[in-house]
Structure formats: C-alpha cells, structure tokens
Amino acid sequence: MKRILVIGANGQIGCELVEALSAQYGTDNVLASDIAAHSLYGAVHYQKLDVLDAERMEEIVEEYQITDVYQLAALLSVTGEQAPLRAWELNMDGLLNILELARVRAQAGHPLQVFWPSSIAAFGPNTPPVNTPQMTTMDPTTIYGISKLAGERLCEYYFLKYGVDVRSIRYPGIISYKSPPGGGTTDYAIAIFHAALQSQPYDCFLSADTALPMIYMPDAIRATMELMQAPAEQIRIRSAYNVSGISFTPAQIAAEIQRQRPGFVVTYKPDQRQAIADTWPDSLDDGQATLDWNWHAQTDLPALVTDMLKNIVVA
Ligand SMILES: NC(=O)c1ccc[n+]([C@@H]2O[C@H](COP(=O)([O-])OP(=O)(O)OC[C@H]3O[C@@H](n4cnc5c(N)ncnc54)[C@H](O)[C@@H]3O)[C@@H](O)[C@H]2O)c1
Image: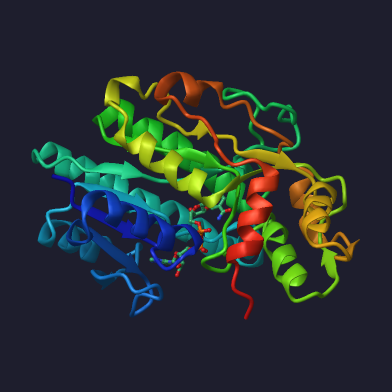
C-alpha cells in the first residue's frame, strides 16, 4: 500500500496533487506538508516541514511509514532571480535531502519512490527551440534553470549509483485556477484570465509572439501520476522527461479569450521576464514519454480557455 508525502503542498501544483493522490489512494494515505504552519487548501493530514530540515523529514517519513515522496518545494524562475543563493540552497539541498534519505532507506530495505519536477527552464539559448528533443544542448541562464539541470543530473546519479527510484518531468508552464502561480515566467497565462473576468485590459509582460510550452493542470497532474505508476523497467529516462501540453503565444491565448469574451483588450509591455522566456523552447518533443509510459496530452487551447473562464475565482 502506498503512503505518500507531498512536500510544498501549499503551492500551485501541490494543492491539486494532494487532492488527486487522495482520490486515488485514499485521504488517510496522503500527508501534505509545507513550510507554513497550516494547510492553505484544507488537507486532511498535514505536517509543517521545512525541506531543508533533513532530520525532521526523516522523522516524518519514519513515523508515517512513507513509501512515496513528491518534493515540490522550490523557488521558481522569477523569484529565484531575486534571491539566487537562496534559490540554489532551497532547490539543491531540498532535492539532496530527499535523495539521501531515499538512499539510506533503500539500503535499510525501506525504499522510497521519489518524484521531483524539473522544468523547461533547464534548457537555454543554444537549445533547439522548436520541438526541443529529449536529449539536446542544455545551457540554462537563470539560477532556477541551472538548479533544475543540476537536479536532473543528481536524480540520474542517485538512480545509477544507488538504485533510488526517482522520476521526473520537465514541466512546461502550468495553467490552473485553484491557486495563484508561484512566481514564474509563464504566470501571464494565468493573470490574463483574471483581467478578462474583471473586464479589465491586460498588460502582458511578454511580447505577443513569444511561444512557450504550456500545460493545463489536469494534464500535468495526470502526467505526474502516470509516470509514478509506470513499471520501473519502462522508465528509461532518470534525469527528466520532456512532457508537452499545448504550445502558444500571448497573442494566441488572447485571441481565444477574445473569441469567448469579445471586447477583452490586451497590450504588450515586455519586462525583464522577456529575457528569460527568450532562452526557453517554443515547443517540446515528448515522444520518449509517449514511448515509455504512454503519455498523451488531452487539453487543447480552446478547451483550456473555456474551462479557465468557467472556474477561475476572481478576488
Ligand atoms: N508551476 C509551474 O508552472 C512549474 C513549471 C515547471 C516546474 N515547476 C516546478 O514544480 C514545483 C512546484 O511548483 P509550484 O508552481 O507549485 O510552486 P509554488 O511556488 O506555487 O509552491 C512551492 C511551495 O513550496 C513551499 N516551500 C517553500 N520553501 C519551502 C521549504 N523550505 N520547505 C517546504 N516547503 C517550502 C512554498 O510555501 C510553496 O507552497 C517546483 O519544483 C517548480 O520548480 C513548476
């Protein structure tokens, strides 16, 4: 039986992952945790946990007899640039703490399955931008991207050297309505809906033609769970899989919103986030994920826009 710990459960992905894992494995088998004292999303089982506190992490894993850990705590691309050393410490030591714990527990006969997300930020300006291959040049220029690339190498290292069953996805920008985004370069694709529903014009911080790989949250959660459920022998990538949802530009999502909400106005005022977006791919080749664990995205742009406009709650 699975006993699951989600670290960073108060975040954009964590809050929805806890819900989906609880539906699949039972609420009593899912423990949410975050650095905050309380769950922000009503998790039934919750512990305060700083991912940098390796001792407390070990205690919790032992006490709850945890079998699977989803380590989501991180500083993202924009917040990371504001505090590079803190981003490096949190993103690397948080991952190393869980990998080390998994190594020690595997040796003691209590293996932990680990999920840790990488990002399209692990690519860089010399990466082929269109249909970016699984294996390619990776020269990230943000501290966030550098930490994701280093994290991918650590995941593969712990698998090859110690047999730790760690799995990862290079998430595209994730679009969702339940929680605010955490400070990334793709956040415009959520903020734009808030403006549309408030009948306000939207000033987009990226240029109209900046294509980026994106994914709707239900697809991202399903990808995560399908990867974790796949038989170990099918997982041939132990760094991180390319997973593609939908690729679009600000102009394309604006046009789809305008089709469904006529009169919505968008202007374009690129800021420092444009320089980050310019180093990321336009679209991803996720053929390896399809081959290894049968990955297929389900949500296209019109369906995403319809669902966001229906569900997003404007403050
Ligand atoms: N959201 C995206 O579009 C996206 C895209 C690519 C990759 N990712 C990756 O997915 C993961 C989760 O992203 P998210 O968007 O949910 O981020 P988020 O910023 O919304 O959530 C991160 C959570 O981690 C918590 N946290 C921060 N420091 C902590 C600590 N020391 N100990 C424990 N918890 C701590 C925060 O309180 C927050 O609730 C990150 O690794 C991120 O890099 C996200």
